[in-house]
Length: 154
View 1 (tube, helix red, strand yellow):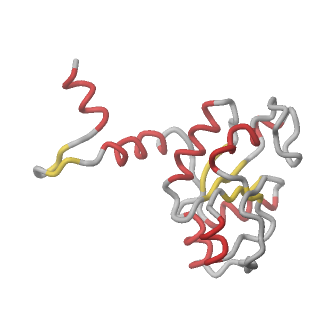
View 2 (cartoon, rainbow, N blue to C red):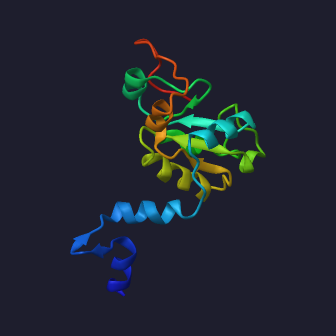
């Protein structure tokens, strides 16, 4: 049984063990369709939400995607659960199928966040491949954040 469990949490190829988190990311990402920059733009244009979970330091350094909601990762599930009394006003009670594209800086933590949202019933949750950095590299609009911007969002 322990061998079986280990094979699910890490793999070995050419004598190199894949870190468990990489195996975990691969597994959870196989459970939903992630979107690229164009897909995120299309989702937003069709009424989906773009949700930035990056800390204020990264938003001040690199900017923000115009129109994206800023929601701290530590309250994400409460703010995006349509049945929660603490849900964000942009989300209605019946919005379990609404597309919600979560992004972090490079697209790793956002995959974990999207999986967590899907686990609480947010069927339309996904994440942006490459995160904010992919957006910026693709030359999409970015808004600068001033030094007095609120540290917390959402």
